[in-house]
Amino acid sequence: MRARRLCVVVHSSFPDDVRVARQVRAAVRAGYRVDVVALRGPGEAARGHAEGAHVFRLPVEHRRGAGVIRLVLEYLGFTILAAGLVGARSLTRRYDVVQVHNPPDFLVVAALLPRLLGAGVVLDIHDLAPDMFVTRYGNRPLAGAVDRLLRGVERAAVSSAHVVLTVHEPYRRELVARGARADRTVVVMNAVDEDLLPEALPPGADDDGFRIVYHGTVTPHYGVHLVVDALADLVGRVPGARLEVYGSGDAAGSIEAAAAKRGVADRVTLTPELPHRVVLEKIQGASAGVVPNLPNRLNRFALSTKLFEYVASGIPAVVAGLPTLREHFDDDEVWFFEPGDSASLAEAIARVAASPEEAARRAESARERAAAYAWRAQGEVYLAALERAARRRA
Image (cartoon, rainbow, N blue to C red; front, side):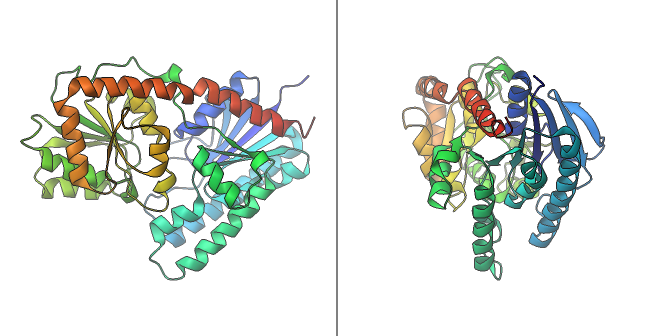
């Protein structure tokens, strides 16, 4: 029997998108022949290979912090090009499964022709697109009408897929409440691929002061500025406290400006554009890892991959006490603070610094809890979802 063929479509860079790369590796190991259609970054070739897959990079540039019109045009351009490429290749390759990652939800039209030719369609919902829009542009004119439109697009995209994947149970419940079929909606969590982790170091192993780390997208609703404000409050309370930020985004400039304004610029380093594996090496041995998400419509469902990476690396985690985060970890496993409150964040970090034995105990308890979310189990769920979709052609 021929190997099954999977086409993955994602409006992101590949293999930089950790969730997509993790799934592609699992599919390749399971015997799928995988094509990936993704964005093309500066200096990247239009075609190549990564993670065992053939990669087709489309000439669409992603600009962080772009206005709503620019973002819509970017999404539309990528969708049109992806639909043309996937449709043309499906005439000769006859994909068994096409997996589309959101956002945008309407990117699922790239799977239209393969679907008509018998392919199974998997829609992987990383984020709720209407909630993302309201978080970023909710104060704009006609925001309410656009929100309703995006909810309609979401319903249509979900109904067109044979299997819907999403990142955790709260998202699944919300999607079902919005009209998704419960029997077709499956959770594949953003768990850590244990095989890729560097050797964990105990907190403070480098003996270079009290290291507070944040890694990931630097954008306003993720609250990185709160960590800068908290650091300013910790000066004098926690000797040697400093902040390391690994990532880029539209708030990077404001973070540097905030550090200068609060007089802690010499205690803050911002390092952009490192490969994910290098970032995981850089954060090893940190004294505390922070998940500072702000309390808004999108973040009530956010379950940051960085949290699992802190936990897997043995780093004490200081976490905004938002509903989905609290659903997955307890007070005796991580240090929660009041969302959006830099003083509460500073107090939580100070408690970590004052009680290293307690911090180590909580970190170990969190690692034990996270074993239930491990990628080895999540990967099996993912492959079962692909198999379910692929059976349509069989």
